[in-house]
Amino acid sequence: MDPARDNPLVRFSSFWLGALIFVLFGLACLVIVPLLGGKEEDAMDAATSERRIENLREMQAAQDAVLTRDQVSAHFRAAGEGLLAVQPAPMKVPTQVVPGSPTAEKLAADTGPPPDVEELAADAPVDPAVMELGKAQYILCMACHGADGNGVANIAPPLAGSEWVTGPVQNLIRIQLRGLTGPITVKGKEYNLPAPMVAQAFQTDEQVAAVLTYIRNSWGNKASPVTPEMVKALRGEVGKPPLTAADLIPPTGDKPAGDQSAP
Image (cartoon, rainbow, N blue to C red; front, side):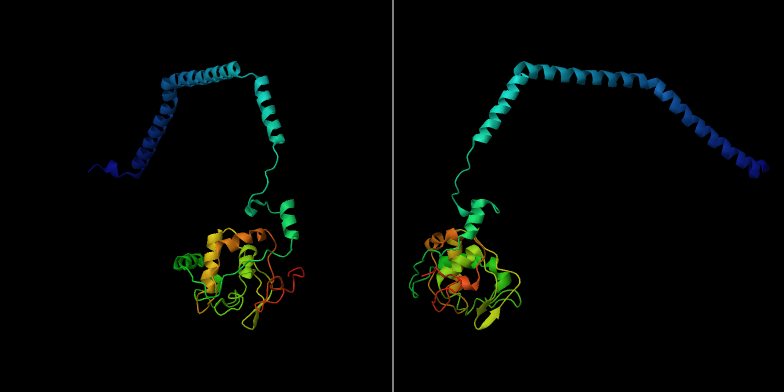
């Protein structure tokens, strides 16, 4: 074995010589490569840039040939005048009312008595299909009133055995369309929950009638069904403030305490 190969000084010098050669090769590449291909790339970039500018000029010239500035201004002016001339369309359904608008404020101020609703006989037959639809709609109520209608503690009162549920139909429809807030006594117990019942006015007349028919004839309750015609007659309640117990017809049939104009 050649003793020179085990000499640390020789090995150290060889390492640095190799590193120096590698660095010089890299520098040479950095200098030579741009000289070989740089001009061609620069020429291509310049040609592409010039073509883009030419395309832009051609497009602008074509637009100017079709529409002049005066023509464009005239079209914008006509569109603006047309928008200014548009008159607001009359409200056709309560859901079109914009919250906070004068119409909404007028509806909120209108707290007159609702129209009378003629109820069906207590022993009127209940359509099974209506009960099925009502059961499906009750899913929206289940979180607060419970799957068995017994309510949820500190959230909502029970519907099973409630005198309000089997009482006047008008109460239930108005609550469904306007919501309910404040204390209310159910089965001898007062409920004064912080979260009011939210109105379900987005439901159709058929859906409202079905879910109310369902709760009036479930969990031991027995009362006359609710019809879509009854709900339609009270659609004017939509948009008004939430009801309180004083606004409702007591289950005994007396006049509501909060509605002095009611018959």
